[in-house]
Image (tube, rainbow, N blue to C red):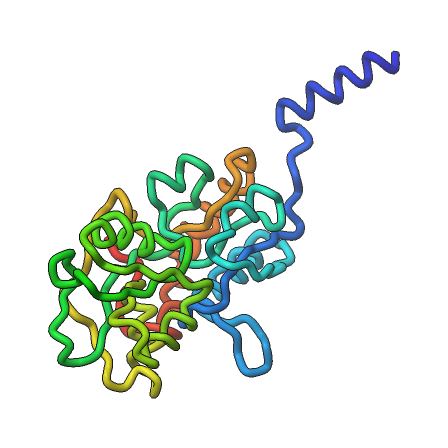
Length: 257
């Protein structure tokens, strides 16, 4: 009888009958990427991604727990079950999708290069030959710069977080910084420390490396969580909640096409 009960239990578990309740959802976040995620003076995590995550948890009747993680170790941390979702402006690329699952799209923002005003440089391999460009470690921007610029003579320097990139850009140790355009504008160019700097060149487009929007990274085996999160996102967009949250941070549409 005990063997029969055990066999039934194993069969039920395999069929998903004992699906996880997800009463608590842990989100991994790198809090150095304002206005998407950063720390307020009191140490509280704030930002567009944080508000979206908290709203998702509210709709799923789940407790949100935020786990700080360096971006370059976000996917390993997710796989190691340090948290359940990577909610940190993670672009959905084919390379990442081979390792993890993604929610439906949260937003779609471009990549751009920032440099000193009047520098004359452009986001091309020829223009950046001999120049030093900073990127946040583990980002799509690091991959892009190392794929297209580094082999042609650009020195690409990865940093643990975006704030370190800007610090070295201001000090003159970098000729430019490559990152999300909205983050650069809101988190740097429109702040006092961004005085004297500007975007150079146009948006950089490369679907294979830069992806087509950001989503929440999840483990492939957690298909039930993905289904719940996707429904919450769709409901937020449909009932106008997404737009209300978006308007707290942006005066333009970041969802994109």
